[in-house]
Image (cartoon, rainbow, N blue to C red; front, top):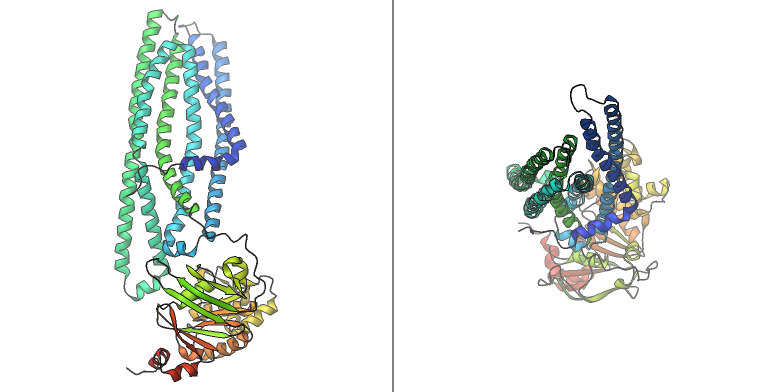
Length: 585
């Protein structure tokens, strides 16, 4: 269930971000004060003009003309100041939202992968995009209306007290009713706007999932089920939005009713004062000015009540954005030393790891890998092969034991320097929007065209790249666009071929490549792995026969290790696993 109130300190965090732009804020306040002053000066001028219209043939046209000129100048100056402070408010708002988005995005890059893996990606996207937009709308409305409304209330109250204090007291006495109604409704709408933001995030997550798995949905005929799921989330968003907007919209008509009562009270009390004093305590022009002020005095309450409702939505979105920004980041490694070019000696000592504490995955794993050796990792699905790769790259930290490279615990060196020593090709390819050249040169941006082409030739990717419309300068869309899975994997292999670091990780690196190309790639890999420590994960055991050592994993433990011939001769789990690939069912 959504919280009923914004988390404590949310407004304070917003104000701390706004405080960075104090000069702009002060200028906005000054311009707002100028705009309010000239708009409130107009009723005085109109009242003075009315007072020189005594009767038929008793109109001082010179004074009336002078007052009308002053009214025109005041209106012009008020409009100019309003335009300028609106510009200031827009600038402050979008600078604050830009800062928050920058903080959120940079923080995402520092979050542990465990957070990214355990949260819907659509929800994270929704916080950075949709929630930030909603927050911007509420903040801009707050700047635009709250400041001008507050100054208008203060200014009109001062002007009314100078005209007729007794009648002004009527306004002061009745005003708290409007504030009470606005506060009563607004205090109950936060939970509704919070639920609306969560429903919007749920819908974004579903859309993100459907777009990313469109082929699978169609292949399995899941269109109707997917549409039903979308209809449910859409209905939920519609209901939460309708509920939030309906209750927040009650604020304005409720305060308008009370403000109408205030206006009627002022008109009645003012008329009584004018008649009873014969125009001495208050003139007809003064009453006209007073009624104009009473109308201007109550109008900001309507606006501020609407602002309060919008701010509830803005605070709900801001709270979700701050919750993302304040998530615990990866343990900082700024104090750690950089890992120089590694020789490639890797040692695992009594390593324990689990994604969920109550479900151990890897237990007491010890392994010593000499520099330049090729280590193949095999085993049934879910045995911990990819998890071991994640630990070597320090995408996750071990829960017990240690992993060392060249005798240095990898937790004592920076992640960047550690990962610079690894070249990695995964089964799940990743290409970014950009040219083919930019994707290959990702790990070595300064590479020359000749070096990039040489790496592509080594990866057997040059042939299909040459057939693309602009060759190496062809722009490919998100995640490879229209390239086949095999072509995308060849580009990822070329990316590693270009850098050739001292250690390699090949996790099903040829899973999407045809058999003929795979044989060529395997030869290229053999050359690439010479003198480099290599970890090879493969389901097709025929691809790892040449490995120096094969680790056989089961339930997070290495149960067998040795060369291909040694393991077959033992007749153990590896022998059964190997022969099962050739069994006829």
